[in-house]
Image 1: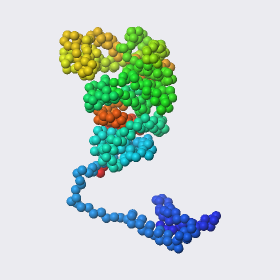
Image 2 (image 1 turned 60 degrees about the horizontal axis):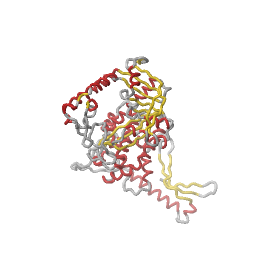
Image 3 (image 1 turned 120 degrees about the horizontal axis):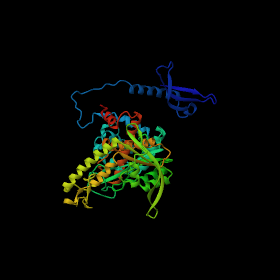
Image 4 (image 1 turned 90 degrees about the vertical axis):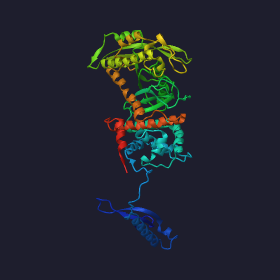
Length: 524
């Protein structure tokens, strides 16, 4: 390092600075960088007797310090010393891939900004990374996640109490973080939200305790425990847009409208076409969707449809064969729906829609196989009613006549010869095996395109499978409502990152395969 003196051409004043010389491979001449700007010589002379000598000596001292700092050092190793067994000598390296996406979405920036001005002893971003990366690679309870914190090359200067306190703060950020992620995904990955898939699932708790949020309901995992409902919106690439949580006894069809309102107002989406299965279809949902100037592609239960519609389905006239897989027909038909008025009364409205019906022999075989399992279970229920309850008889009780359940315990009240197999219902169902119906406001789309759009629902169903199996979102181990909300926010963020990783790898690998690979990438 040396002292540089530069004379200003305009005013003739000399400025001093300490400069370091360095070389870059491939360049002929050395380069310099300013280490310290000192000011003008005439002003420094007021403070120092001889500024040039003084700062020349300072440059020499800095050079010596630099050399000492960058010189070789000698290490002494004691071969008898042993590593403490409590020290984690292996670290996961695979999470660096997840961290890259995490920072691409600027989740760190979001959390740092939201924590600014808060009197927290913990770093929210540090804890969020632990929760999200652990959920993807080492899913476990919050306590176990804290115990595994040394698996990553991240800071660990927080306590288990800090981890639980952070959940309360995360709960407050849920809506804002979902909107933030949506905007970042839209900007970086060109999200197409003109077509939005929607579905509902539920998650159970390892407790019998019921409260205002955790309620007994129809568990899709066939568990007797309390559950909560989750409604999830997803784009055409399979990346989630947003989610909402509901008490466990909320019917699937009642979850759509509040989520759609948020999409229009908070996420600033234009016209969207909602794609959902028959659990969502209701007069209120159809009317609400159309009133918001949106569209819908809903599946409709053929077995629960009107007699006129069943007659149309079973009439062979009009069906067209598409390859060996299925045959299809459609019609434009006004349909009456029941809508809840402002006063709470049901009124009749008429909607003009396209009704698409298709038949698949593969679906027919699957329906017969599934029903045969339920019928076998129904026969067992008739012979041993004491072995079953409302929750454990799922799928079978509908084929049994005269079955009644205790409202409190769920136990079967009917006994003896009163229980009979409903053979009439079985025969009626057999007629409609393999037939599926889709109703849509998008009457200009051809039949094949409508079926193709509806089949895209498998992506959201697979997302639920990923959260339940790969991310082990359930059973939920926290009990407070704000902690439950925060738990699902971290699971949702983990799912978003996993789906983006799928997108980056062109869908070549499953989430399970990628997480297993990243989990095994470790080092010492």
